[in-house]
Length: 87
View 1 (spheres, rainbow, N blue to C red):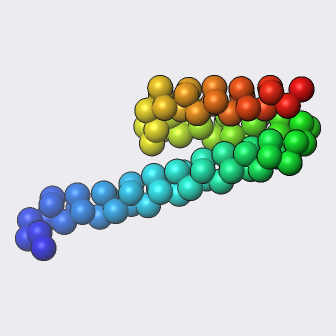
View 2 (view 1 turned 90 degrees about the vertical axis):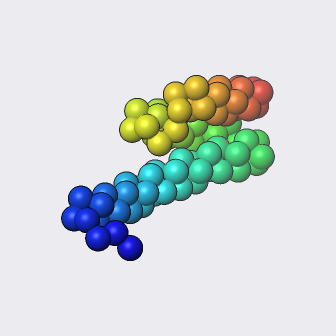
View 3 (view 1 turned 180 degrees about the vertical axis):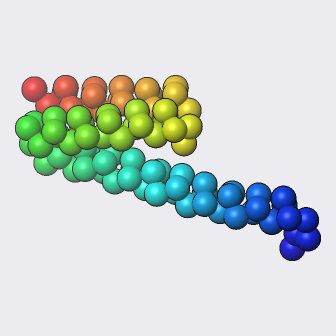
């Protein structure tokens, strides 16, 4: 356990940031699962709506630094390709 005041504060700040990152990552994964489920069901309208929400979540996560920009773009691209194949 840390004895120095600044180190104790660091521990608290890191826990707070880790919790925030985990929540954001979880939200992104859930939105991706919704797109995959709609694609699996073959529901173009639902897949399109879920894709819009997932794209927003991924972009937000990338802007906050939770995901790398390239990772976010790759995931968005793959989801978009999957939805576009439904036509």
